[in-house]
Length: 609
Ligand code: AGP
Image 1: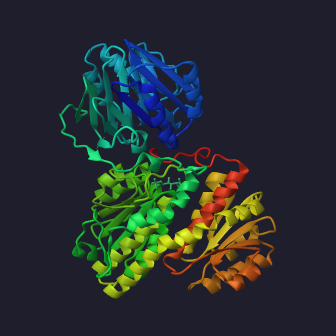
Image 2: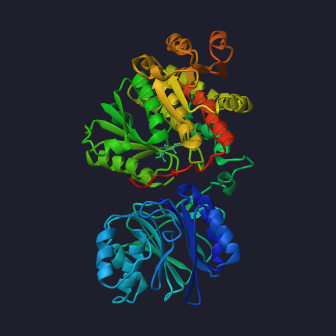
Image 3: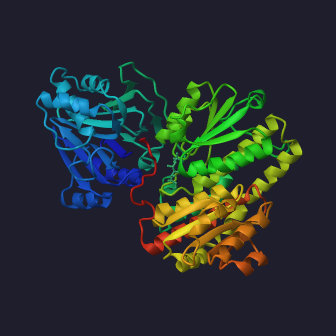
């Protein structure tokens, strides 16, 4: 799980690569490095820690050259250190790699016996040595790379330079993301679109098992085995500004504030108001196909899994089709019951999460109908699914997922309407009512965002607690889980989410005057019950922060603190409830001085197991 960037053309490579790496730092920030080629000689700069260290190093020791590769690392094999930082070099070969080479120990042993000495603990260095070794018998750079890649097991996206072939840059992909940007006689390679968006909008998405060689102002695509490919470019209309902080202190805060826009974009063009139905352009299942679905399994990780849990309530409640929700890393290894009557839905912001991708493949191999809810166009999961509902959240850079989550809920709600209409469980009237409720969400999110300053005050009051509990019932239980995850991952405070009615079966023993308990208690069918659970906490001296409907006097009278939201619809309140929980975590993290956008030990896309 790393970010890679490559450049070949008429400009100086280093500034382009450095800017690209800045956009990819969310993929890992254990170390960074850049290599360039000029006059048959390479120069490499590498530095442990964040990119800023490399940037400072480059001020003292600049790198010239119009061909180059760069890397920002999330350590898997070999601890975070300068010696393990990419690029790695063996003889004339220099490369950067994202992924894991599973047979590297075996290959390393063979290479050592052939006289190679290794400087790092990484699996990546093995690839460089293997190419160097192959070049001894196969002088053609491209052929040597192909032969080497054929010997690797595992996942990779690689960019490779050769000092003896300074006019060429080779990139290849198997299991890790890679996009190629086409310029005027210049080419860009990156792990993700924002890295090269400032330079070109014309992008080619590499598929697994493909290779590209840039040479003499051309890009030649082929399979790794050598069969030529005619790849088509796609025009990407994300603006570079969309990937910038837009004046906010952190990407996370910007992304929280983008949620009204993100939901608007996710529903735009999809509502068939007169018919009480929706049109999902990349999901072309017929009504008959949808009506034949016997059961649904929704598979995801982390925040996306929390969205899946809400989706179960939507689909079961409104379409009366049984839904099972699974964590992708569990699903793929537990011999799941999946057959032709099963619809597998995978949810992933990045579309590159390794466990979710593997779970999708597992479900497909068992004959399931399948689809994805995904934010990144043409990501691996989006490409491999039969159908996709894209969440139009735009690039999410903050490691803590916010706008992607709320748009995932939106997409699940849209899908529920479509499914319900297809299987006859939602009639046109009902569909129209659902659509008109959904249309109110962006405006109400804007309203909810006005809580930002107030939530900061609440954060100040509770920031020193060591543990938090989050409670909710029904659809709000997954929101409690999500609130707890947000707090854990960016403020490093221990937090747990529980179904409010489950407290009395154990967790209530944790309650004392030091544990803030966030209770999600908007008006709705479980309001009274949740109120009783809240009371149980208060009786045991718990400090309740109630997230409730605006103007709820009863809750105001009982809770130590209230955060009041414009709740309006039981199915859609989870979207509004998410906002103050995101803001609370954000402000606590800022007050504690943690690295909000790049919290410790985490990376944005988990593209390894
Ligand atoms: C959430 O804040 C986390 N960053 C994480 O749980 C994330 O949702 C998970 O890794 C799944 O990612 P995906 O949606 O890109 O598949």
